[in-house]
Length: 307
Image (cartoon, rainbow, N blue to C red; front, side, top):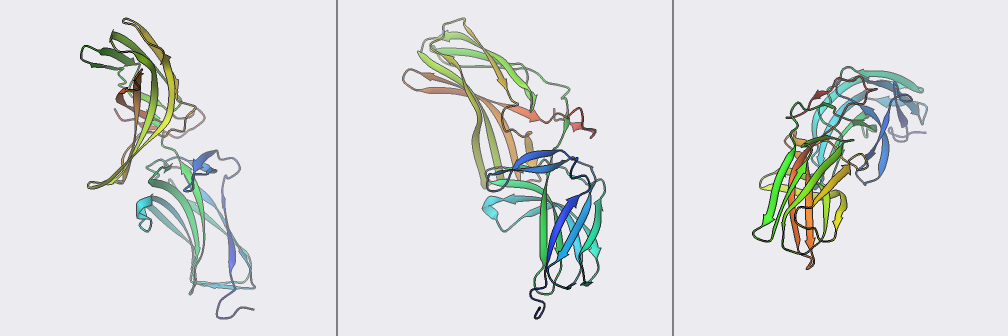
């Protein structure tokens, strides 16, 4: 028996229209655990069914709706989410459910301008939310979706050449084959030693991810080393060259993201580090641009990558 509407409730299940056939990708949730989510691209339809199973004999409600939401949450500002996409479909007007009910829904050519992302201080997520509006307490259910943004190959992709040194002690030149890489690419390069008058113990290369959130004066930068390996062990001599070959496909990377909804950015840097016998470290950073290449099986039209 239900008194004053208490106890009469329901379970909500959301089933996507192509849930079995749609590709799934791993995404980190807020707790840092990986979960598999259905993958969508910009402009794709989002369709499915909502199953409502009553726990009692009937359920009075003030309306039932489904929403498609794109949202940015800054972890240092927990109570203040920023919705950049919000679409609503009414499934039922106010009334009463006297048995289990299934509703169809569809969101056509949905704009999904940004890639899903979970970082140190920020999360960008897309999700469906079903709400049974009730006089005292709503019944809600959410389902997360993953979104990837695709880019076409950059027209201009110049090699990177730089020199670094300490006057009369060290002079090296390094070169990378290009400055823009897709997420399954290979970084190929060489390091030339033009002058060596300090005793170098080893050298390593790393990829640094820099996440920037907020706006000045409340701006936060978080650096994370996502890839690192040693490329030389022992002292080099003048005229020696060291080859570099770093495969990106084995690392958890995202495309470069610049000023997403004026809330955050994600940038990547190649960091070259030399360590001498007194454990002094010499390093040089160079920014690279990462982009997501379309899968040949994917029919979505990619957008143009930044130059």
